Length: 272
Image (cartoon, rainbow, N blue to C red; front, top):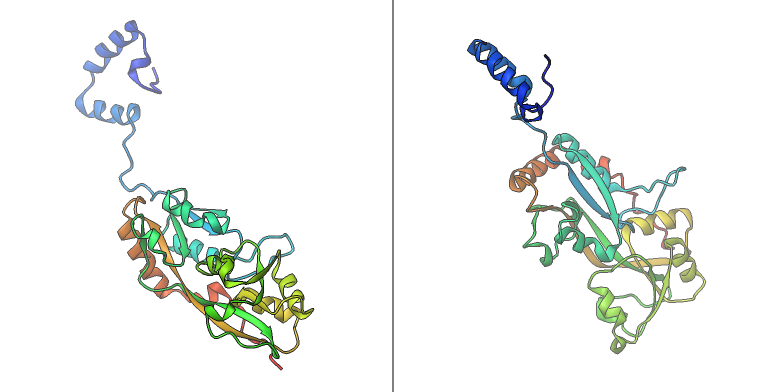
């Protein structure tokens, strides 16, 4: 008789039969049979898969391939990390406004983000940035330079939908600052509006703006860096052995050629 499952599924007559037959078997045979009926639990089970969250509007690229797949440098880093760590991987995109919520609530347990104080209770944060980028303000040569956040007051500013812009969004929205905001859907349309004189400044991140301006140069364009933005590994504390996994990620990333993985555009914008 071949036993496929639990003995509790057998009827009373079968149980009595099995009891008689099994009692006649030597101890070694019983040990072998027990492994067939009750398979042993794996001791070295694979780590739980990681769920990586990334924004649907990226701060490091705007490009897509011929199939419409977005160029996502940070997603490449996350995949490389988990592959080296031999951890299963899946990813999910969220609107920028829901990124921190998704991590805080454990809807995803891994990301590469700015270090927000709201994440300190729920998450571990890497010790060093994975990459540093900039939020820039672009303008034509004849337009006054921007020296800081406060100097945006009273200006006409083009913004790009999908970006939260961090602490700048409340400043831009505050009626006391008298800012005329012109939101647009794409980076390309933002710089086209600037070139046409429909506003005086564009708020955009370093790498996406470089990509656009390399394809569609704007004459006499200049910029100032409004903010420097460091992006860190973020891992939810509920992930099994979170501290050990974060330490492993940091060891791995130290050995990676991070610039090759990110493959970011060169900063070569014409200013004259």
